[in-house]
Length: 202
Image 1 (cartoon, one colour):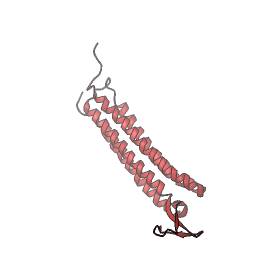
Image 2 (cartoon, rainbow, N blue to C red):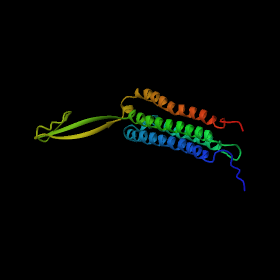
Image 3 (cartoon, rainbow, N blue to C red):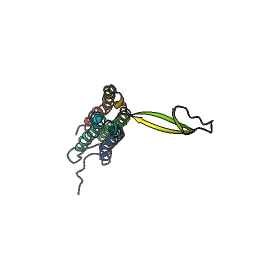
Image 4 (tube, rainbow, N blue to C red):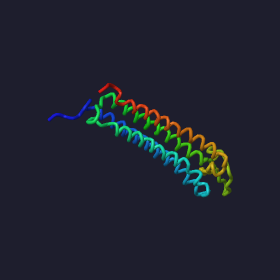
């Protein structure tokens, strides 16, 4: 019984690996960006619930990253059909590089979106309350050399967007440029996947 497989039998391994890498890494970036920025939005919503919908933009932009990986994964998987067309190692490497380009670009973009989305709605200020003889006063130095002073450090979190609405436009611009990183990976991934099948004439 003759095999109908045409091409290199190990080549589909690299092709499917590229499809998996595109989706997995992009979803990792989307998950990190959603979780990181979502924590800041949820904390800010306690003080200013009317600003939740404005501050949820980073969560939406992070979720788009998974779609980029899904597109590349579908393109790669539909291009692997050794019974219909010969599939060589050149094609497998092209699909692998396509998946890695899109996936890792999406991962880096997700990390950037998550950090910016969290910091864009959050500002941390450290307040040290110094208690001395039953009196509490706001103090900004920890006086550990004086035993009669007992220092209580409190970390107070303010939301930057809630305190300064003008930061919203700047945060959106930063998020757009961070999202562009994943778009670059998507474009290069499409170009690389289109190179598959051009190694030789059948």
